[in-house]
Length: 292
Image (tube, rainbow, N blue to C red; front, side, top):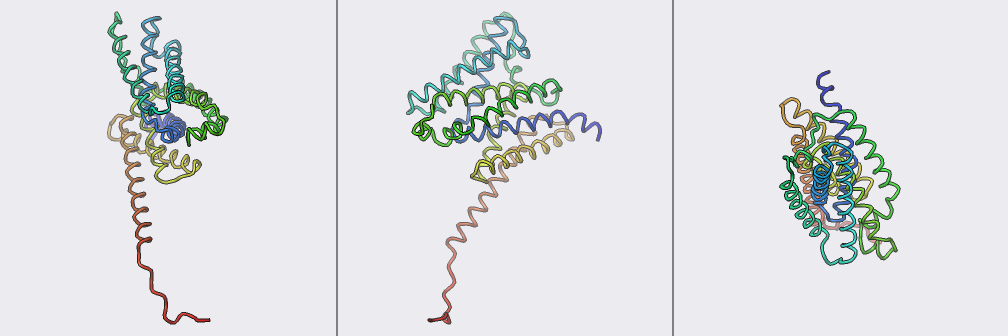
């Protein structure tokens, strides 16, 4: 038991942080229909890290590399916000996909220019197994700060997530709030990817939010369901990986997928039961009913 706690305590705390902040971001992402924003932002952040390494010799885990990644993320945030406001007929998901393709091409081009080998994949791989206390503290500080920003700015961000056009009609500066949202999500994803890798972060971003959307409609209920789903999947995945000598990240993603399947089955059963009750024949009125 002591060995189990020593190995899993820090990864579990990291999963709690990731599940908490990413589940909330994921609820906004689903509402805004920008499912692949995680991969796009991660790829752009990788380009920033490569530029920092080429220009300054900065190691991927250093502050100059992190700062360069954030600058690239901010530029993408501004690009998406301006383009969505200026050309609203273009689906924002298409813009995100094009941004990812350009960022991936740029990464390949920059790597080809490097005099030494650069492992771009390792910059985003992350490893929950080897996470240390300093990584955990830094992640907590960044996630807590962005979480406070989300709370303080919740009214305009929720308004625009629910309906972009209603946000415009209500007088909100939609382009500015879009930029703020993308920046906050970019900071979260850039930090989270360095802790856990793209696949785990994408799963935490989308799956708990999807589970909550299947089972509830109000934001408080959905947040509670999303955080519960992320926590259960994290515990099950970590224990599965520990006892079967499996990688932590894929195991957590596996159990997040199982939680989603269970939620989908529950929703299907509830929906079917509602239909059966609706179309079921009503009992005939009693012939001995009271007549006034």
